[in-house]
Image 1 (spheres, helix red, strand yellow):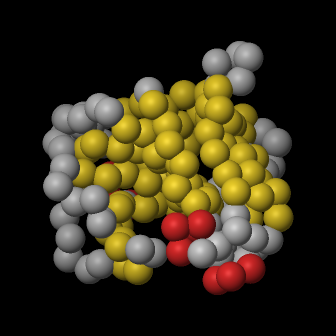
Image 2 (cartoon, one colour):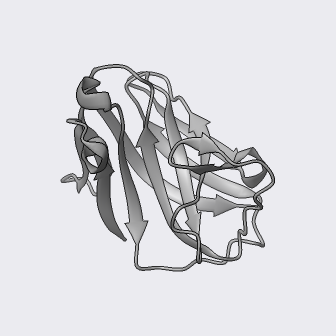
Image 3 (cartoon, one colour):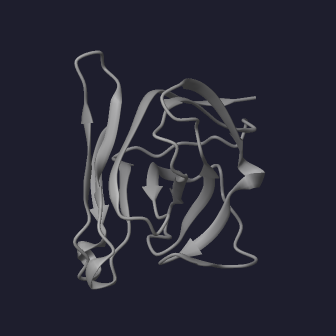
Length: 150
């Protein structure tokens, strides 16, 4: 899967973050959040693959966090301005399996909730992670696996 970073620099912020695959094959999302210049977020998202997950109940992750609250994100076909978010907050330093039902996702546009927008799970074009907790400092999230569950 291809990953790309989208940080608050798109709006003048100074946060830095990105994705890498470590020597064991795990995805690592890490960087530093800065609240300067109205900043405060970092994200990564997959690209290049459309998924029909309509036969599934949600997304299952095996992750190890740093205690901060992240958002699992998804985007759908034709809606580049709309993202669907669901919060996850894995315990610091422990590998955990997190199940996120599709019903827990809510629509957003540039961080604002959009009531009434339906999540089309048969047209997912991107899965990602966002840190937007309004706290300065380093962050680190490791992802061993991402899959869909029934």
